[in-house]
Amino acid sequence: MVSTKEITEMYREKVTENTTSSGIPVKEVYTPEDIAHIDYDRDIGSPGQYPFARGHHPLMYRGKLWNIRNITGLSTPKAYNERLKYLIDQGMTAIECELDSPTFYGLEPDQPSADGHLGICGTCLHSLKDV
View (cartoon, rainbow, N blue to C red):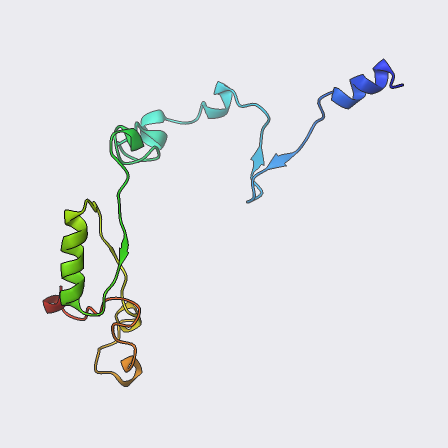
């Protein structure tokens, strides 16, 4: 049988050293004294106001629905444009453009290293005319 003393010892709070994954110490309890040096307007601000520590929307995520975006990237700019128009008509609210590797790495389409890679894994956009 377990004694009262043993039970008390098992459930007694133990002093622990808590830290974040970056090694920053975390206290068990924070009080107003811990933030006495913080100026609310300068350091935190209300949601939607500088310095945007609480987000850039005044009502935070509740006032603006999440963006609906599908990753889209088709071989030619024309095909990509048509697909985007279709997706927007279907309710997409933001664009997520998947570029082919030559475009991603800033290669010109006529460079030898771009040969065989144009439009393979995304859209080939290399000039303003393509957009």
